[in-house]
Length: 92
Image (cartoon, rainbow, N blue to C red):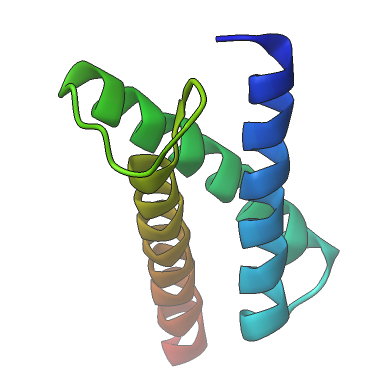
């Protein structure tokens, strides 16, 4: 993996995190959380695709398809888990 491909992957994950924040809203804390989740999901998805030898939308050394799927899944999972804890706090 080359350094430019790592930077490209991080930038693409940040675009997803910012788009998710634009859609769901929130303050700076949520923006930071969504971006970190998007980056982690992007590279976890890339790792899963690499280990499973899946080639879905390759972009140079980046397995873009599984990376995007991993990022989206982790964004929705993080959002869902964070909203579950907020709902429990409001019921008390």
